[in-house]
Image 1 (cartoon, helix red, strand yellow):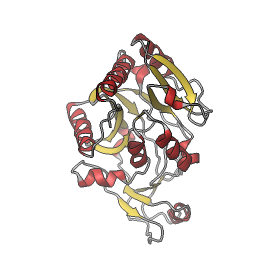
Image 2 (cartoon, rainbow, N blue to C red):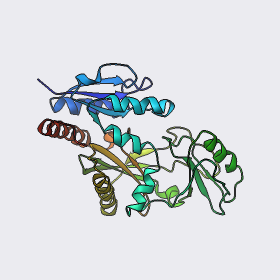
Image 3 (spheres, rainbow, N blue to C red):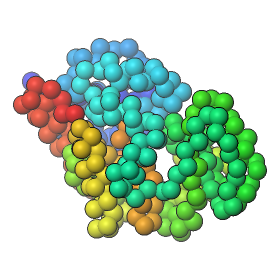
Length: 287
């Protein structure tokens, strides 16, 4: 009997994203039975050998419900404890403390005073996705005060970062890692424009991109740190700015850029099969 895998999505993305057909075909080629379900559907997730979070792109509107759902799924990738820390961007502070090069960040919890810095800067909340509630401002722009106040009023910690202007010309590099190994790379154009306010969701271009040796090395260093925290990851997208320097570690529901690199969907499917094999051998899903 084939192992059964569910891909978790949301009501707005019933057929997954553009990578969906490639991913479904690759998993089937590995002999896996695959179904796609809305994470809020209320189905019995225990009937699957593995549930893989994919396009759950409404979780930020149901955050506590989403975290509770992850804890309720018996065999989830990436695991619930990973999702819990990865959806709060304060994990970047832990990575920086572990020696990973990150964008210098000032953390402003609710009640903190805020003075706009004398250089272009970025304001974002600690819980967000797809650049929601995020904007870049010119030096000294006092309009950012209202932005910070709104995030604080919502009980969120504010991240204050310098704007890295090199991204305007070079964009971001996404390093996709499956089963702890680098698979391929992706390109995303600059998401923010200084002074333009919060960007439109998905209002940036994406493409394939070769991963440099330095970028691959940094991505694997990040995974090593997470492994030291006690977590093996089925998938990870390590988002880098020129340097390279880490901007985000996406291990909850990242786009995977599969359509740009032949063979990448197969590598993901092989990682899923290996994860299931490790689960069978050790009686529990890898964590």
